[in-house]
Image 1: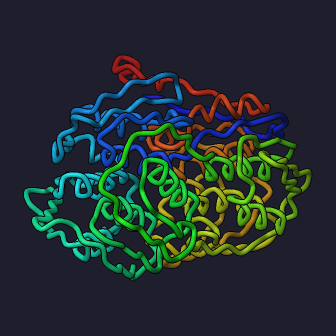
Image 2: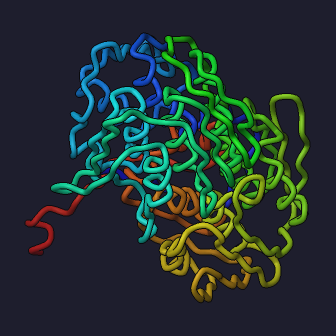
Length: 429
């Protein structure tokens, strides 16, 4: 058990380097199952979700070898479908990608209930709709999601009732080796959808249209291994962009694709923050209190839901009244009480929040309730007066590698330390 301790008030100056995108790496790691071959995946972020996904593949019979901190060699030749451990699958939402990968390769799948951040209702009905359209039958048995395609998977047209990154990825995985052509309509357009399609095409798939709302997959007989590099993480980049806006200073956010963060850049510019785009990095600078803003999260290329908590924390320091509307998930304001403990003024009604900006956030002891909420508390702590202590760090570790070291490198007064519990003798006194 550890905690992050922040003494706020320092401006940030220097360079921060962004790791590979977790949300792109996870479906690609599980997509290796489809190849039945050896793949080398580079620029993997060394975060806990990646470690869990690799351990799942190991437990299923894959050969997994770390070539360095960010590169893994994955050999799925001898992997056994339906054998993923429930305790590991329950640790993250991305274990659902096992469904599409196993179904595509073996014609059946069996996976325990997924975990990850809890935004209350996160159904996989769109995933199941796609699998059934391809010819699979579905049942829930002893807490496991079970799929079976006795007559093989056949290409078809799947219309997603709502835009879903997970469903788009999963249908793509299942359809890659299916007979005929599959068309996904109302598909998600996120950069990690494009990255998954690029990986599969590098392995011999025939997919085009990724990045638009219509993706076509012509089924192929087999795939082969490849070497592939994961794209940079636009959410990690956006998190540090928001941190600089909250504290002031000037930081170069390096190893990014500026187009991927255009919605974040546009909103920061509206707030009065200076953002300069270069080929593979972004410079962010701020020397005055930011302006109020209204934010509504939308599917890409709209403002990302995974940046909503970070910007809510940022808007706590803005001049004036701001609103944040969540257009993707229900119950994504569970972190608000933690920010209120730091002096933030929130009024939440359903999927919208009104934030009354203040120039005086105060340090407090708070708890990270989910991955991006943890990042929001870090941003608030950097901007607050006094000391902030953040606990429940396993949520933050799912998506950020060495966030403390990266922020210390640009001047933040932040450390990570073990939680020291008072002894029973001390309590008795």
